[in-house]
Amino acid sequence: MTGPVEVLLDLLFPPKCVFCRKLLHKGEEGLCASCRSSLPWTLAGEAEQRPEFVSLCVSPLWYQDDVRASFHRYKFQGSRGYAKTYGRLVARCVREHLAGRYDLITWVPLSPERLKKRGYDQAMLLAMAAALELEDVAVETLRKVRNAEAQSGLGKDDSARRANVLGAYRAVDPELVAGRRVLLIDDIITTGSTISECARILRSSGAADVVCATLARARR
Image (cartoon, rainbow, N blue to C red):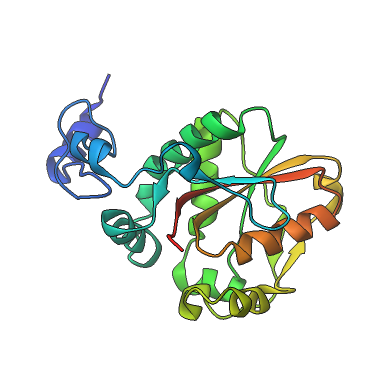
């Protein structure tokens, strides 16, 4: 039953769709009916791709239009509450494409410098929300040890992106991933360079396999 505090909060701050920002109707949570039918969902095989060192990476959405605008609010404007809805979408995609293929859930981490500036790690929040939906927990396996230039500033130049993240990550505890099948979660996949580098580190630390999931994928 909804308590008085929740009722008051809904009156003061009516819940809105995380994508189009329209007021939600009763029974809707995070996502309105219109967006549910009109968002740029990946269809069938479109959800899947295979970056280097990754057996399979899946994404429920294309990174465009309202998805891009929503993500920018989440990543750069402090709308961290979006993680719950995003996590639900990622978890559904994981169930559809990666069921039974992982033993451990983790995320692509921010550098300490960028974490301090932003105040939160958006991939960590997404991974934790998705893990909760999957009745699991997300654990830290990687640490970013070099504050590389933001990948978004390099466009879609795959070679520049690969060079930018090479050696930027380290395993926190190799024994944690040794022999385990790892589900690596990130927010957006563009060229796959960041995910590939993280997967390389996980495999070199003994991971038996690495699969990935992101909220959205960019069109190449």
